[in-house]
Length: 415
Ligand code: PLP
Image (cartoon, rainbow, N blue to C red; front, side, top):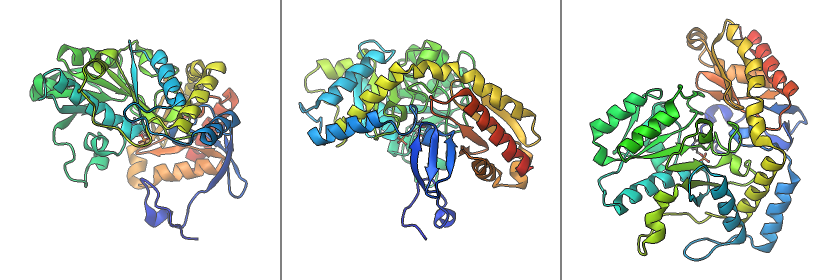
């Protein structure tokens, strides 16, 4: 039956009568409406970090809804779960005297972080600092600013010029960032926005020294460094906010996805105490920005239990402990005739990129591979030239090998 549901980022001319309807999930498994079981190697959209079917999270959210379904946190209003989650995140964050600004998701977090950066500079007497630099291939959501700075060109074009004071630099060069800051003029640059590991743009790990390097360059020129940890946080790279992997201290960190493992929508920005200071200490310097569902009590209650689970089951450490297993399962695919590159070995993230030849002969090759792998009982995600995996952190080593085997079988069938 044709659907009335307009899917994001989807070719509705194809999807309109070929939807894949999922009904339930349990740990790393999801089940479609025909009762078929799949290993969810994508953790939905990189976010079901604690696995599916956690009744503790559902119970906490339901209990909170019965108690106080929702209340805004504008002005002096707040609610207990929002306060408690902010305190917990501030404590876990690798930033001194951190403050937490909640949003409804990751894209909104990115827009919030950039607006905070611009207002920070204005409050410091540098209102000309509005320019935002991002990396080619980066993805920062689809809100206004996230669209305007998008490094995946196809996500930026066709919508008009949304953020004129922005530019992009090659994703792998610290020197290119310095050159761009100098070209624009440091006095005009508000922020550099970067994903520690580029996700949607192809799963590209940073070169050696990159994360610390770009933050140092930002600080040399008074530019705020915003780490977009929407995918990389909450154990995906084996740490809470991704940047700890490089012992790095940006000025702002965006988060979403894994903060609730997606049980309810929630995102936010963690700000270094130094960045929050002009807003916290100067009456009248109000950040005129925020949205209705910021600090939603049920979402925050879900986040609190999710963090408990990540801690209690040591899932953050597991994200790193299993990275070698994932690399071991995917690396052998590099010798397949259809494979150009395998990227794995940084947390529970992996990608298998197809060769230019196969992509040219068969433009649908990535989608075809993803569908073949699904026939082998494993759900992956298509990413431009690659198929990506980012399983729940609860995954067992033999299940990781099952992902590798399904990909191998799919590649053989595609050949
Ligand atoms: N930033 C990054 C790095 C992301 O990967 C995403 C989503 O995948 C976003 C921002 C946007 O998050 P959301 O889809 O919750 O708006």
